[in-house]
Image (tube, rainbow, N blue to C red; front, side):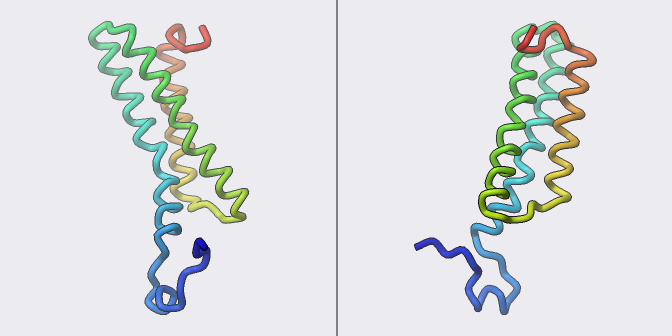
Length: 111
């Protein structure tokens, strides 16, 4: 049986359960996707590497997968997300995709 509430010992010491720690950390998972997407685009653009531009798009779009999955986890589990990390993740993904579109629109997967 999975423990959903922290044990009284954890609560008394102010410690979080492993599930709670994982839940909070997972909200930040899209941040590396956004950063790596921009870095890959810059590298591909400087070296005129067309595969790299497309890969940068897929990496940026792939960053939305963990964010959506965490949103589903939050809704199903009726839990509140760690707002600061969730907002930072979404803002960085939007910024990375907007930068990609502004500078590299023709390499987008839907073109």
